[in-house]
Length: 251
Image 1 (cartoon, one colour):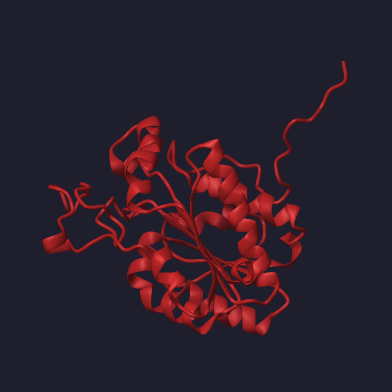
Image 2 (cartoon, one colour):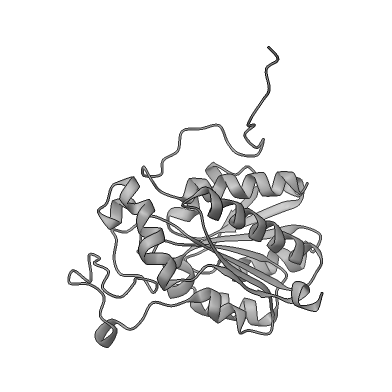
């Protein structure tokens, strides 16, 4: 019987033990990034800019040139990288606490300027690294260490829907929200990520892909229940889909 290789790990995905908590989706997003860059032949020309939080450790797993930016400032750093090295594919990797809170000004202005970068935004609705406090994306009724009775709109406001906000800015050429909790969503997420790479390669402007992700530790759930929560609670709050694709609309 002839042996057939069913799966080969991307060469730029480090073969090391993960430090992420069981059930965390960061590792899935890392693998998707690595395979997407490799399949598109972009790995050797890619530069990643990471910020603070669980996402900062991407440089341990995806083997491309990586810079670490101050808290929230990754889009500003990426702007400088892209303008000084315009032929590079420049990626930004941020979590929801980093991007939608302390880094809100940076992401808004980079997007509004139409910087030719690709932002990968991992939304797990809590501050994952610092103990599970309420984040800008925490859902109404969701309990965190700083909202023990659940988030209330009257006192805490509403969860920020960053993909919808990005899609309204003229400098944004591609904005999508995806999830990685099942095979169907994984396939759609891979296509959206590759489309975001194409938008940058074609010089069309700013690309933004939001990944809905589980955080079992700070949600106080096991991995299976956390994965199910993405379907049952997160997706109704943060609808999946392509919210803007300038090139696709033009076609």
